[in-house]
Image 1 (spheres, rainbow, N blue to C red):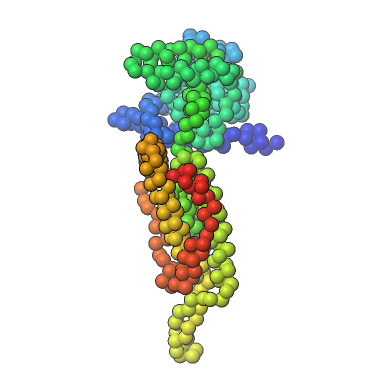
Image 2: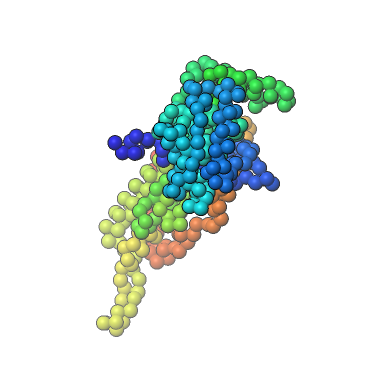
Length: 431
């Protein structure tokens, strides 16, 4: 068996923790909050250590806190766990045979590992009895974050799991009790004063402790129960590096995305686009783009095969005069794609504006919901730009080929006019 088959969720768990680290690192004493999925959180700093030995006292303090609070991790909280340095810089590991956490020291490049969340990650392997990053391991990690006094970090960790497709966790609580717990959390969120809020949270915490479940799991259940869709980021592959025409493919996708309230970031080589928005809108965008892409390429190939090619005048040195020659195939193809994408963008904008206008006239509540969705996506996208330090703009398709092959461009416009917008209905629903 390969390491991947023994621990299939490892890569996604690490990616989720990278998200968490980025959120935590984005906070400062002057700006202690972070906005994720349109919600603002104040997690507090992620405690740092100068060397692995310094983490030993932290592990001892966490285990003592668990014991004093009566937290039950099947008796594993009663066992001592030590911390030692390790030679490699790339990994932190838990050694079950000796109950030892091995962390890379600062001097070999282990700065990334000398933080509380990484130490708690390794401690979770001990407390869960799981070496793989299974649903049970994830549920234990969320519990441990809360029991260690980091409830907001646990909330953010659950959000990061969901963003990486890891919403499933294993817990022993039944659905009825989970619903009660979710209800208490909803009541706390909607409380009109701090005293009432604290009372509901206290009841929720007592219930969670009794059933050994993380409140973050119940919060996720609340969101799922209420059917609240939240913005997400999804990476979408455009094509292999070096393939001609990728920028025109990206432009087509951007025009479709714009009509569906999706914001995008683009890789520097146009090989991938990250879509930011609501999952249902992203699904519509991908389906529509893929349908239009197939139609665009097929129509372009028919045009090129027809022999109706643009010509340009060039100097023939052997004949010592100017002669007319067909433009290069790639030039005609790029001009066709460019015009096609532009016209599709126009058509989709017209459809979207008509849909929004009708819904606005029919219901002020619908108009407010649409506006709120725009704001949610805007805030989510702005946070993604800030977190990833993205400041530049994409300009890969600014060098037009339309003037070099006007006949191909005209054919591209005609093809776009007759293209089937197979997701017209979905576009209207996504509005």
